[in-house]
Length: 103
Image 1 (cartoon, rainbow, N blue to C red):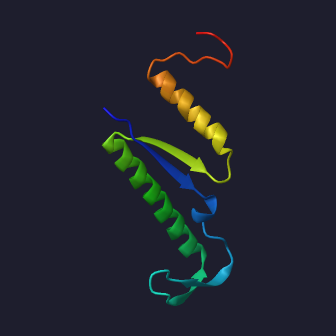
Image 2: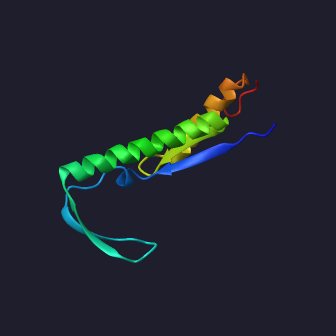
Image 3: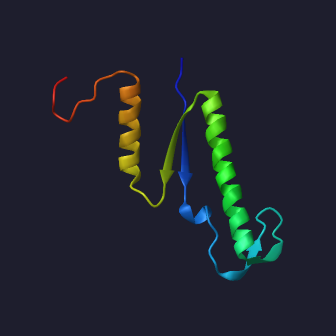
């Protein structure tokens, strides 16, 4: 009887690694530092893993019956929320009216 809405916020900088060569990354859990070369192969594997993660998230939410709203930090999130709300309203068979108009 309840509706669940999962809001996923995506920063495009987390989807692809930049082509900058050698970087030092720190494991947030252990504090251990690692030097990593961001080669083309490493960047491609990272992008594939990020896409697979998004697919798993989308599929799990679909199976659970929850609604899924994806917001991106490089887009106008207010417009995206409004579009999502309109799609949900139309899918529920409720009329969509403009501001000030009477149904």
